[in-house]
Length: 582
Image (cartoon, rainbow, N blue to C red; front, side, top):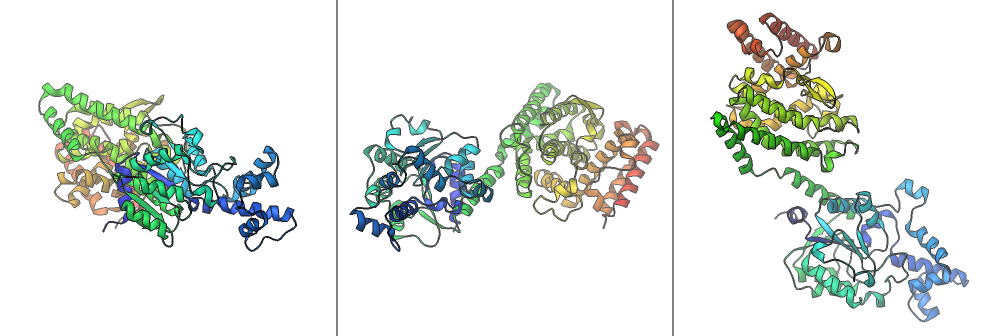
């Protein structure tokens, strides 16, 4: 049977905006904010102290015996803090962090609140119903740049837009801590106003529910709203710690819900948000759309009559990718740099670029110099949109999508010995971000990353690799293009050829004072036999074809046989010094 959390993750990801979160006090527990009832009991203790009485061990029972009624939040506040300013100061001591508490992370949004806020930011959840008085959910949303509509009483429901047009809304069914009308006692929890009942009836009829931190034992009115809901169109998921009480079990049976045993609200919502994001990232474009793009490219390449249509195809793919890379979370180059976030971002880059990668490989294999110019234009567009401020690591990895496309182009060229036609992509310089830059030096990871080995080893599974980013790219491109090669070993030989040609071209375009005998290393650095096979391939061409060799004709790393051989010998010597081989 599918893990209920996985089932929930897929449901939330594929049904944006149709699930509401129902949150109880358990969601705020790790923040060390007391529950409403705990505050009432603390206020009772203050009243008892004022009267010189001992209310322990049962403050509520003492209050009932002393005053003949259940303790009331508003009356207690009036008793211990007579003016509005005094009341707010008292309540803030329970709900707002002191400087010391803020440093400790107390009374601040929890991991659960922040994960929910991220789900809201992604459009997966729009409505949050909570029994909590605190403002942690609102703060977490504000930290995500979201200004929620907050409803903490029936009088605020009248002006709400229809649910279908409502943005993010936080409904505090028991009120807000600064409002003395909050609901706390059994009598107050037994019934809601007609306006609140009508609103919640619609919510529980039209939305699925993700419940967490709520026992359902005491909130009779809220429980009744769920019981009245006639619809079963979306599921109810209930995250619980320990065991579900009888009231919760009854609601689960009624709604045919799925119970999820959890370690706590923080880990539950954090894992849910991670799962949803992962599913989104791994939801690559439909294979048919990529297949259609490749088939279209082949058809357009076969007849010059279709050259304008090929130009439109490549330009549109480049424009779309550039727009995606400069929007949303990828516009943020200042967020914390971690292995988990890096792996997610790199995989998303791969998903976004997947169609253009396949089209580039096709064009690299069958295209001419004019097609190379089209690809270069797309690459320049993708590269030029990079941000220039932020963490150096994130800024460097902005090059990654363009590098994948360049590698794919050369892999195609390697299959059909089409290097001369494609060399126009890498020759010369480009005007990028107000700088003239030799385009060949844009692509090797060792050129665009300050610490390619250290940062690359943060990628999942790459922690012991000599060339982690290059090895990761090899796996990615094998998954994308592997069916065009005889075997994985055959693919590795072509991949090594791509990296070595780029390393040679890169060294050629940098002055000796910049690089000396340094070449950008790649996976070929730890594959001695693969490197030797590529060296042999190039030397056979240079010796057999002389100045007609595609390596000379392309001008990528020399204009004569001797110049090309000199560069090749330099790369061989450098690779041996690395000491990576086996």
